[in-house]
Each structure stands twice: as C-alpha cells, then as structure tokens.
Image (tube, rainbow, N blue to C red):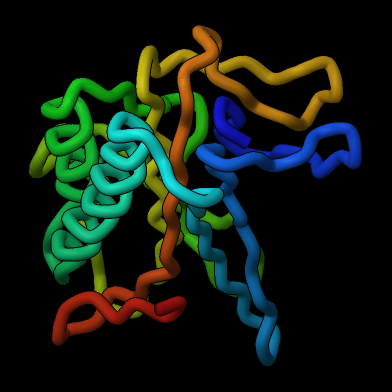
Length: 178
C-alpha cells in the first residue's frame, strides 16, 4: 500500500482509505506454465501526484511491450521504461526486476526496468517475459522490512507496479495477461 513496492503483506491493522493506492500481483499456472501480472489500483479518488504516478507507470509498461520484437534487446525494454519514468521525475527501482517465465515463475533472463538501447540479450521468438515496471514517486532506493519480505521505498514516497506476461513472436509482442 502506498510506499510498498512489492510483496506487501495484508493486515487487519491497516485499512485502505480514500486516496490510497494498492498493488495486486498475481499469477496463474495453466498446463504447467506460469503467468504473472500486476496492477496498482486507486482507492477512490487520487490526488494529481498519485494519479500521475499510476498513469506514467502503466504507460511505461505499454512502451516496454512495444519494444518486444525479434532482434530487439533487453536493454531496449529497460530503456523504454527508464526514459519515460525518469523523464517525468520518477525513480526507477533497480533492486527488483522483471524476469523470464515459463515452467517456473522466475526464469532467465532478468528484465531490468532500466538499460541502454541495443545492449543485453537479444530477443528471440518463443521467449516469454514478465515485464514489470516498479516506479517510485521519489528516490529509486528501496529496503526490505524486518518481516524479510515487504519491500518499501527508503524515502517513504509512493510506488506503483504494473506487470504483464509477454511472448516474443515473429509478429511482435503477444500479451498473455491482458
């Protein structure tokens, strides 16, 4: 909720209120194959800053998906997210990244939300990637709480997370979790 980047643990002690944001990250296993998707939802009406954080993070995912082409690189995907989000003044989380996905939830390659165009692993038809921008309203820095699981922003700024599972095909990206 709000400053939780990923892995927040629900609690009866915390109650969502108007203006909060909450991320839901879930997946499905079908016939032995995994999928992974995340959405950050507004709770009621958001202030302009929170709305912009959600809008830019979601748009950066769509930009990253457009980069999923045979022969493109993981750096192209990461650069698309980084350019958009840092261009709007947001911090791009570097401690957690997207990933390959298939018969296991987390497979190679890692899919950073930052990078240099033309660098990194080249995309090939048949690869399946979980692309998941994790974007902070402030610093990119995160820490894991004493529970050993919940990651939050170091500066207390809000964080948004959107994710899709995307297959690389000869015809371009195929979003499997729309």
